[in-house]
Length: 226
Image (cartoon, rainbow, N blue to C red; front, side, top):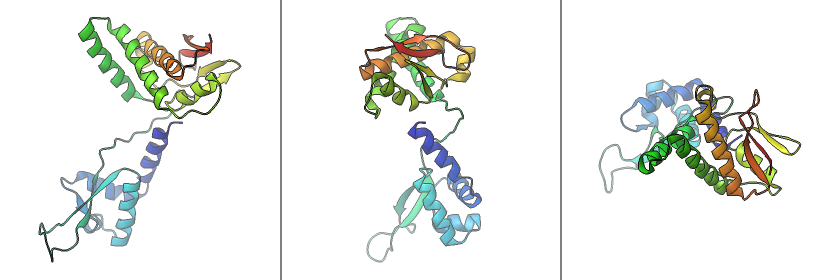
């Protein structure tokens, strides 16, 4: 399970509490950052309770904080700046099983740009861009010490593929792009192949190959010994 997924689950879970959810919705709907006092009054909560829940929302990355004197005055006697809250720019969504449609969008947008610039077919550009993204995933991943299969599994697990080792083969029990793959099999499977192959290249996992080997209930790509 990826750290981004765990953070998203935690963030969404923070909104289960009714008072916290009300404070978030209030702050998100305002054109300007709000003070604790404003939020408490609007949501009909005790000030100490509003403070606690607002700071929890900040800790979860759902709200951001700034400090400003509401009076607009400066200098001696102007008073201390107020702590103000506004909705964070961070986007939070949770899908089970884990999906990464934002990654599809990034790859396809870059592939269309590449196809337009160079004239190569879009399908070919998608595979090329996906491989580049896979190498970047490998470069930024924290993998355990171990063999090629173990290190590859670590990277792919961090991006929602849910790898399962079967003897010397790595099967991917989840496709992070499942809904698109149902309607655009060739395009998405080609992207998966390029991405997983890019991960292998980025890890220097020369003992392994990414192969297209569809099987019901699994991603279309498997990782096998070369």
